[in-house]
Length: 257
Image (cartoon, rainbow, N blue to C red; front, side, top):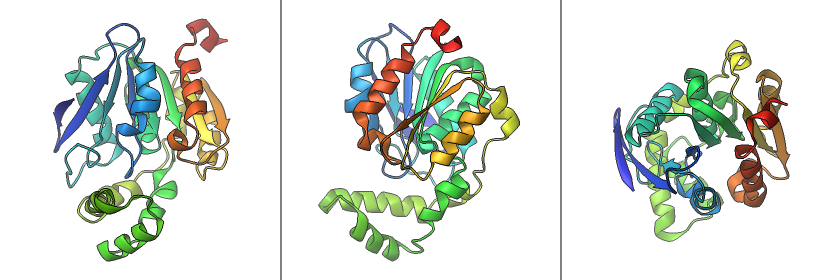
């Protein structure tokens, strides 16, 4: 474990595996996500032949809780700072789920030369349509606590910690305003992205239409539809792990075919 100072926050990071092979960076989703999303079922087996880098995004897991910086440019800068800290100064593979996928896509559009391959797992683009509305239903911490009690799966201290973190994100930071400002990436920029992209979406996910749109726009993308909803790392870990292993080990000739 290693902490990295970024603009306005301190991020908890973790590396697994050795220096051989193309480095892999994996980004988790919003609110309930943290580096544990990837650790056991994905990062550990993938680290057998490469270095895998995980970190908790600002306001999540073991990272600090800032009041700002949840927009995609700021979080893309966070990723760049984590990469520099861990000396990932050459081509690497990037995987992101949900909000992590949006951060990964923004980073790819800004730094396409840095990436070898990109995997977007149920990217909810645009977040202003797919993510923000669900977070606007709870107007106060009390309403949030009632909703969390009715729908959350955690209990006891874990539930209380999660509730405190969620309340801070929703009511004490710019997160919701930043989400409302997250519109779709411009079509012309997506059409220019030549990085090989794997789009993994759940057939029952409310974000599936976003996957179809990205597939139509990205020039070097394939779409894989799994039999699950939005939370693919938890709902279909074996299928997702197989897709990652397949795509990340394809040779360049196969990708170009």
